[in-house]
Structures are given as C-alpha cells and as structure tokens.
Image 1 (tube, rainbow, N blue to C red):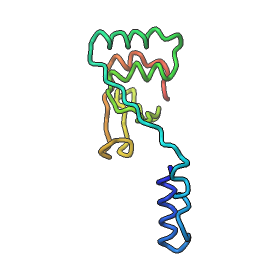
Image 2: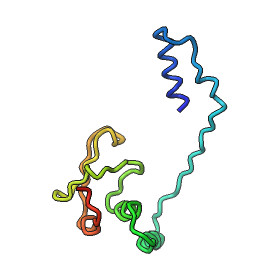
Image 3: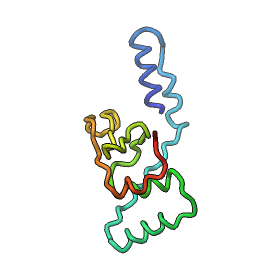
Image 4: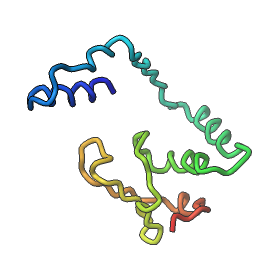
Length: 123
C-alpha cells in the first residue's frame, strides 16, 4: 500500500503538485505480513480426506460450493469469480483478461459434476 501512495506522491513531485513524498515517513510503520505458502496435496489418500472433509462440513455455504468446484476447474486462487461470468446453459465460466495472469480472457468448461452440484443459481 505504501508503494502505491509513494507513486502518487512521486507523480505529484514530477508535475509540481507536491514538494516531497510523505509516504517515506511510513517506511517502517507499516509491517508487511510474511507470505506463507502451503504445499500441494499430491497423495491421493490425503486428497480423499480433504474432499470428504469438504462434504462433511455442517452447512452449505458459498465457500463450500467453491471448495467443491475447485478440484474440477483448477484455477489460481483469488480469481474473484462472479455469478455473472457463469453461463450454465453453455457450461462455461468466462474469466476476463484482467483477472488472468497473462492478461488473456479464458473460457473454463464446467464439468457435468459441477453443474450437477450447482444448487444456487446466479441468474
């Protein structure tokens, strides 16, 4: 966040709208959280345990649906799926270019298993 603010102030300095980058005062005040990566589950038995755990969760929520769908589509986390991007008649999830790493639009086919579990319709 500080880097974004700093860029704004540097632009302000370059265009004569600011005298200095006040974001530098925040350099040690804002602590950046350390990223923790989790290993992929590659053991079939452990994967089965994960899938059973998802199914045995007490309530149906949008999170549970997303967890059920993930093994079928294998998209990157944080994609920000939107109901309007799902076309159930064509069985396709359209992911706009700005949400993709390489900045190309993507059409993700939805399996019959995903469509069969789709109990909340985004229409």
